[in-house]
Length: 322
Image (cartoon, rainbow, N blue to C red; front, side, top):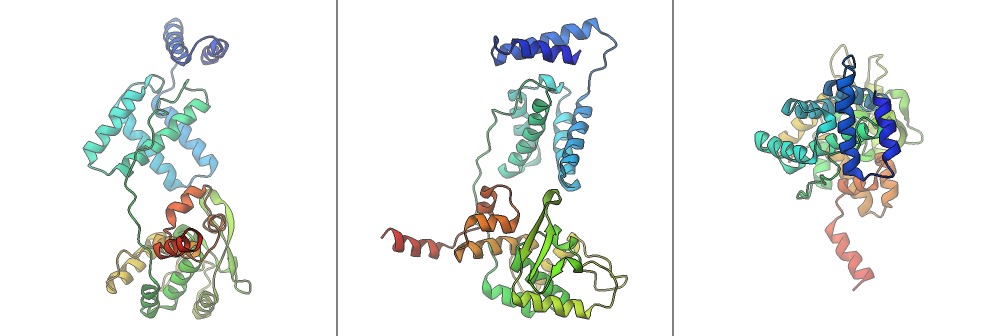
């Protein structure tokens, strides 16, 4: 039945406008369903599971897939309306209710909008719906606060107060390469090329790229590896037996604890990544090369990570404009 409907819709696409095609689709589904009682419609939950399966095949992480699932499940719990019949007005109403119920920021609501947009765009691409109803709901405008980076002085404080050679190697590797914390914990010792001061990391979607570290990081890594007495192939392991691979939460807790002990504001792995990007741009590295180092698909993402130093902007204005 579904193939018949889509064939009819395609045949009429050059004659009817979008609203008329949508109405025709609704009438066909209604009438044909009445004449074919044995046809079992696909439920909203089944469409969601199909979408999540597609995202898993595309290489999305389980964390990302879980976020998609939670977001879509929230919408499906809000209304039992079939996905084919959902309208832009209904989705606007849901986003407004979501913000009021959870008291969340505009950034969070826009993340929900973006996830739902991916879902409905997939339904449209797979010909499960005629047109995505969320297409007309644009990005929610939000204030962009200036995010902090780690100053040179605070980096020295962190280095000087590392009691473990592992932690010193860890923060210098994050600071020097700008890699993600998820990439850090997946590293094995064999992934390092100490001679060339580089290593291969596997980013989002298991995409492989090279990152580079400085001479100081190389020395700290050599000292740390030489101090190891275990046989775990992981680069960073727990300090105590059985010396398991360090997890993301372990890195986050370690850095947060160190930062609080030194009264430094919000020390976390991602801050090292942002600091690296900002330093690179401030020192004149082309943004396309920074994008390559960070493993971003879109250059706009790189620009959001990097905060250009205002004094450099002033100096450039005097050089090129004044």
